[in-house]
Figure 1: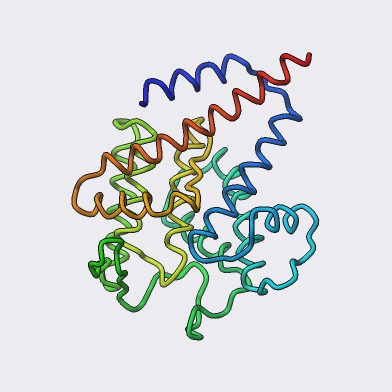
Figure 2: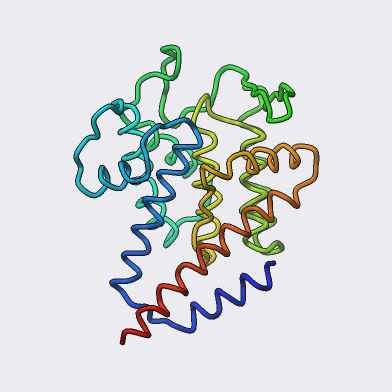
Length: 256
């Protein structure tokens, strides 16, 4: 699949310089789709249409909570920050903490009234009930700093040896296996994954709400050292993004 994707990427690059207005519209679509889906996976009830309306017009949506609005605007701003950061920064612990801090800007508590400190690692152990009904324990809080340092070292060692899509997918999985923050790990992991992709010239892989079961199942398989399904899932989303861009460019070329 990587060969097919890289061929699509070459087709897209052959069109450069790309149509500025069209690329701005596509970037807006990615920003809205990504923001909607990544938050919807985590339980935000705003629809795609409501998300787009709020991000474009700045007007709140009746019946949605302040926290839901903050999650949307914070993520959209994190995407804007990401697109600028890839020009002059690489992925580091500091940048990851910045992503988390942006996602939780203005959000004072987690579920149950637990205070949240934007950008701070967890101080208590966490776990999840997996899709198969198994209780999965993440890295202990006392080991987070060491595990995150190991993750960044692995990334720096692997980025010149591994295809960017595989690198991005495996980084995502390794990050959520640590689960370094008390909340927001899924959203941060998807920001990191797409940071790696976009820094290497690929469009974002948008994990869609309707595919969340496949997403969780593939992540659970990766916990058991079977990473192929998760890498393929990410690759399929990159391919879909590339195909969308090429299709829209072809439409403009036909008109002109």
